[in-house]
Length: 90
Image 1 (cartoon, one colour):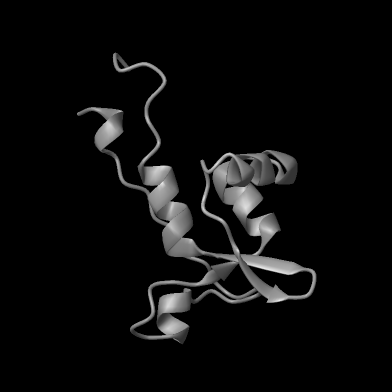
Image 2: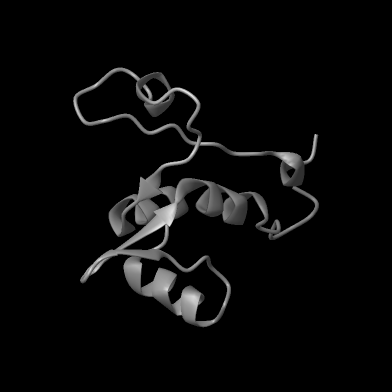
């Protein structure tokens, strides 16, 4: 099986909780992620994320306050799932 066909997904839970967001919010499969969470999920640093946004290579976030940006988890996962493999012979 090729790694290019692998689909990733995430489940976030509130701090100090053993339940997933899906258990807290039935019927909701999207959550908002702050820059710290986006850094962890993508493995990219803040400066790299904003460079990719300026280049049109990463989803732009949404303003949630005067100095706060959030991203939809579904858009981040779509970006990850659309990444091309470095070497197709893996």
